[in-house]
Image (tube, rainbow, N blue to C red; front, side, top):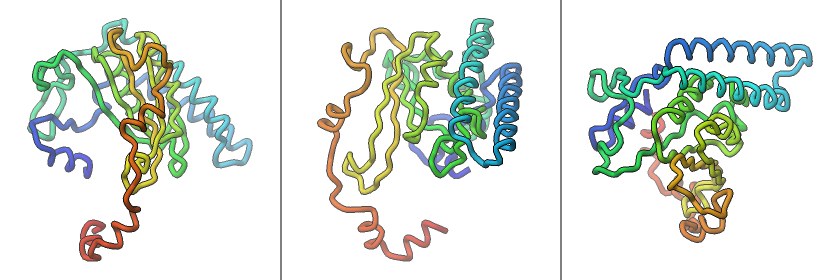
Length: 253
């Protein structure tokens, strides 16, 4: 609800959809949920036998297998014509059914390029999160995002996640449509912001005419920081200490 309030407060007339997982075709979602349950059962059995709460190596192994199976499943549904480019779902911004997938060139000043910038939940991969990997509680949302990338006729996409996110999973799903994934990890503090928070950013290029560099397999950290790098003038605690306590308390409450 809080994130939705933030989106509602943004200028412009962009839609705010209620539940992104409703984009999955019902039959595909049912199949995905069955696969998630099966892999979760395998993990639970392993942990029970070992007497552990977590097993990172086994979770990673299962996650790789899960992604490969889901990728094959989604490709089958894509080839069978399950994707509906004219899909409409409830929009909380306009109080009606609105198109989920924008038409190329609409609302962007006639620009011929079409992109997707997203940052879905990181809890399954973060150090302080569940560490459940690809088939954790956010698996259906992740599969929905992959379904969009596979079908939405995009030229590019930008994804932001925790630095432990396994970007090869993107490559497994998107290999069938020839997309390239360029990852880079950096902290806000390297861009001049008073916050040490390392994140992984992945630029996904779908169009053959779009390439970061014909000779590069990944985005160069050196070139990135030479263009955008800055040193923070202070730390987060500096700003916090200078903020009136009443404002801090009001923000927390």
